[in-house]
Image 1 (cartoon, rainbow, N blue to C red):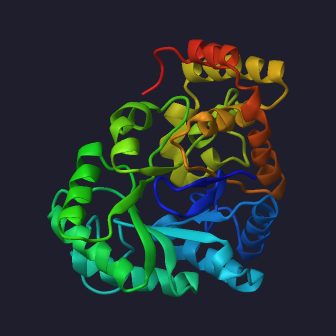
Image 2 (tube, rainbow, N blue to C red; image 1 turned 90 degrees about the vertical axis):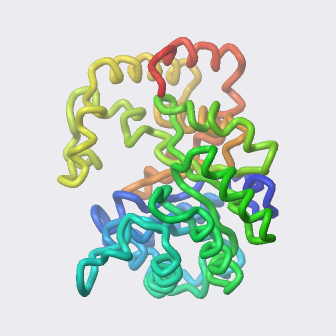
Image 3 (tube, one colour; image 1 turned 60 degrees about the vertical axis):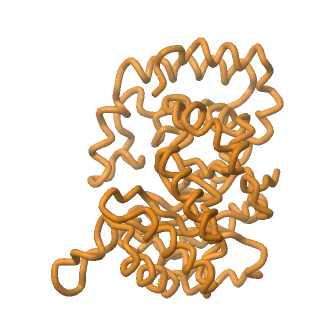
Length: 327
């Protein structure tokens, strides 16, 4: 495994990491969740990604139970979670705990997540989306306090604009607060502009790290949706039906087929090539992978060995295949 610094921070994370979105609480039970994390750990993964909203809190519960049973030394792994959407309110209408980054919500949400994860702290707490209805200064002070109280080691953002990230950084800098150190954006061969263009100045100017998600475009870049939705895929889940239009897009699947030909030429799977392409970007701190079977974990990890094969000629061929089709 290769380990990379998280932007300018001292924390080192595995170049390939493991995430629980979609699978935990939807496709997997506690035993399967534990086995997948153990398999990832055996491959050198030290970064495990989660969010309170994943499966309405069940994902954190499963990961927490797995971590408890696995008994790893806490210094040897990184756990993250994210806040914004909130969970179904137990009482009332939840007006202060849905689609928000207000102080009241954030400082209560972290306690609930820690209880589900059975941890004293998370390594990174993310603001899962921007909140235009809460003053940015309020959110920055709340995230600083979360870190200052020892409930998170670092904080970051997910799917924020470069302007909002810089705004938060400057507020923190002005008031000598803990600054956002990392952004978690979608990044894959079909979705590139934010990471490659919008954030371009932030890597050098503020040392922004990135923990990118959906390197396989929700499975599209595996090639398995060329003939429809496989019964055992995430696309077959009822709550993932919204993805069908993209997953079954004939034009996109034709492009993926061309990528598959290139993958065969260099001796790997289409998925491994797509993941390796993400790893090739020096501004990517870690690529979050997902899996529903232990075998998938091992297959994903083989992408590391493909990166040296991505010569300038191979990268040019990939660029030609995806010319004018990425966002």
